Each structure stands twice: as structure tokens, then as C-alpha cells.
Amino acid sequence: MDSYINLKNIEIEELKHVDLDRVNVNCNVPDFEPQRQYYYMAKCRESVRAESERLGHPLTCAVITFGCQMNARDSEKLLGILKAVGYAVTDSETADFVIYNTCTVRDNANQRVYGRLGHLGAMKKNNPHKRIALCGCMMQEQSVIEKLRKSYSFVDLIFGTHNLYKFAELLCAMYESDRMLIDIWKDTDAIVEQLPVSRKYPYKSGVNIMFGCNNFCTYCIVPYVRGRERSRDAREILREVEHLASDGVKEVMLLGQNVNSYGTGLADGISFAELLREVEKVEGIERIRFMTSHPKDLSDELIGVMKESDKICRHLHLPLQSGSSKILKAMNRRYDKEHYLALALKIRREIPDIAISTDIIVGFPGETAEDVDDTIDVIRRVAFDNAFTFQYSRRTGTPAAAMEQVPAVEVTKQFDRVLSAVQETARERAALLKGQTLPALIEEVNEKDDSYVVGRLSNNTIVHLKGTLDMIGTIRRIKLTECRGFYYMGVIEHG
Ligand code: SAH
Ligand code: SF4
Ligand code: F3S
Image (tube, rainbow, N blue to C red; front, side):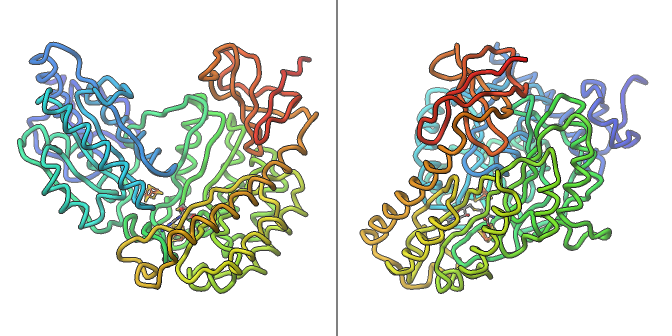
């Protein structure tokens, strides 16, 4: 059959346009990526088609994301492959194939997964053809795998963060096996480009610029489950951003655990600030965001680039974690209270309309009420526009897990103090925008009242206004008429 395609002869750029039904799956499996995964996608299509014929309906799938933007982006990669092999995407857990993309940064994330998994198991009892897969950060922990093996044997496929790019291959293996299939890698250097992605939003997208983390903050599990830091080639990043722009994307969010150290280890050694300058040049992209900045690595060059830019949003997420120099040292954050304050206030001086948000942990081992006073002092002096406050969660295997823990009642008490301090500054900061007219990207129709739409300002503030579906994905000038605590009501400014 000469109309068959042999993937070995296809250029990487053309792979995404290949008709998978014409791929020859009877030849040898390509031993290089990403061609190998396209081979498995073609093969998997046959299994999906056969099963769908047997069941008498198109197969549906749902990917449920727990965790951060990086996990959300990974879920879009999984969905890209699921669509390519012939699944219809839903967001209901009644789907034929359900995947949980898990998070393990705090214990409550793990507990949520176990809770919901119990329900999935019950659904599978009534519906034996249902398939269940688990992936993401939680799967990189040995103790989790043991528990799943023992008590959740109905799960069909388990894989981790390092071999996500092999999803098509794993899917094929799942179709050929009737036992729980587990494939977890400890680490990898591989960054496989040009696999299909299915975006959640047509007008905005995350873009990975680096993977992993080398910082080893003593409370944090991420370096253990995401592996060593590695930056993606700048040309690949730009190629992706250009592609997104040509596909109608207006806003990109550059993703990494510590974007300020982007480029370390790359041959051409480009800095994060330089990368931003290049992304800024991509026509069609109107807004650029990034996450997360580590205060120890945030350069003056970056502040300069942000200040001059028309596209980089007026928002910086700069996790503080604690305002106490003693606790910061124990956390291995490698900055102290004074450094953080000086940096945040410099940014406020240089870019007055910027919003600064943060993450704060309350109840780290050894933290006293005086340490929390320091945290509250920083909150008031920086006047955060928004803050995510977390109670410290003990993560097995991290250095802080072995330190003496703060009693839970004390943590709750201190947590409430921190929470009211951040709510106070957030309210004050939000109120400052009243009466201004600012551009907002219209993101969605209001869930409760479909005569309203929801927009986002450059500084990340949410605004609700009268509007219609066709406005989604457009940037409009909105007059901010009424402040409701942390968000605004507004009206479109015509003309
Ligand atoms: N790389 C980012 C944060 C990733 S995790 C950074 O360094 O800023 C997101 C947030 O979860 C962290 O900023 C921290 O505030 C919180 N976090 C991480 N580990 C935690 C733990 N063990 N307990 C409570 N919160 C934690
Ligand atoms: Fe965790 Fe620290 Fe790395 Fe952030 S920088 S992911 S908090 S170890
Ligand atoms: Fe969670 Fe993994 Fe992100 S642990 S916060 S999903 S990197």
C-alpha cells in the first residue's frame, strides 16, 4: 500500500499535520522522538476505534488537573494526544477514560485525590470498561505507589512527571494489558518537542520555558518530584509562541518554578530578561505573563525590561514565604527580610502601577509569633495586591519534615492573623483603581449570569461587566466603576 506513511521519513515540523490513519504501523517502531510517539498515536487510534465499535458509542475522556499552572499545561498535552487517538473530550468523571493529573505540594492535595479516586472506583464497578489513569507529581513518591498498588488496584495506568511525553506509548501498552501498568522514572534530561497540545483557552496559553527545580527550599517536595532544573531551547520557545500567535493566542504565560534562572546550562546562555525581549517581538501576542520569580534571582535587567515593555503585564508574583530572616534561613530561601523588602520596594518605585502578589507559609518548624510579626510587617510595607497563604504541610523526605513541628492550634491562630493582614492590603490596593479606564482581556461569560462577562486587567485584577460571548478573547477598555472588595464592576468605554 503505497499511500502508507513511514514516520521515519517525516520532518519534525510536519508531524503535527500527518494523517494518522495513513501511518504504517506494521513497520519497525521509530527509535527516536517525537516520531516514536506519533507511531504509537497511530497504533492507539486502532484500539480506540475497536473499543468504540464494541461499546457502540464514541469513547470519551476527561483529564482532571490538581495543582499548579505547570500541571495544567501538562494536562493540555495529555488532551492533545487523547484527541489525536480519537477520544472525545469532556470534563465529566463519567467519561470512559478518566485521568487524574495529581499534585503533592501539600498533603490536602493528596487527600483530595484519594477521596475522589474512591468514587471513581465505585463507578468502575458498575462500568467495568471504564479506564482510570493517574499521573503527575504525587506519582513520583514511592509510598504513594505502594498505597495505590495495595488499595486501589482498579487503576489501569500510572505514570510520572518525567515520562509524560511517552503518553501515547503508555496508552498503547494499557490497551494491551489487563493489569495495573506502572511506569515511573526518577529523572530525565529529555525535553521532547512538537507533540500535540489541546489548549483550554483559545486566546491564552501557558508556555513551558523550563522544567524542574534546583532550589531545595527545605519544606518543598517539588525538586524531588519534578527533578533537576533544565531550560528549554529559546528557539523552541519562540517557535511555539509564534505558532500560538498565528493560532489566535493573545496572551502567553511563561512557566517555570524559578523563571529568573532561565538559561542556566544552555549553550547560548540567554537570560530570562533577554528571552522576554524576544517574546515581546512576536507579532499578535499582546500580553506576556510569567510564573514564578524567585526573589534571590530577580535582576535589575528584568525590572528594566518590564518597565519598558508594552506587553509584559503589570503583575509580578514574588513569593515571600516568610518575613522572618531566621525562618527564611531555615527554609533555605537564600534571601532575608531586608533583601526582600528592598527588592519589592524598588520594583514599586520603578513600576508604580505594578501589582505584586505573593505566597506565604505559616507554621514552618520553629516559627514563633514574633516571626509572624515580621511576616505581617513585610505584608504591610510591601502592601501586597494579593497573597496565597498556606499552612505549612509536612512533606516526607524534605529536610523540614525532620525539624520540630509547630502545634496545629498555634498554626491556625497565626494563620488567621496573616490572612487578615493580606486581606487588608489587598482591599486597599484594589480600591486605588476606582474610576480608572484600563484595558481588560475578556476571558469568559459569567457563570452565574450570562449577560455578564469576566475580564482581567494587566495587573491581574478581575472586572465584571455587561457583555456577550463574541467579546471573549478581545481586549477592551473598561471603566472601573465600582470596587467590590477584591474585584471590580465596570463598563465598556466606547469610542
Ligand atoms: N517555585 C515556586 C513555588 C512552587 S510551590 C516558588 O519558589 O515560589 C507553590 C507554593 O506552595 C510555594 O510558593 C509555597 O508557598 C507553597 N508550598 C510549597 N511547599 C509547601 C509546604 N510543604 N507546605 C505549605 N506550603 C507549601
Ligand atoms: Fe519549591 Fe523552592 Fe523550588 Fe519553589 S523554588 S519549587 S518553593 S524548592
Ligand atoms: Fe503541585 Fe507538582 Fe505543581 S507538586 S504545585 S503540581 S509542580
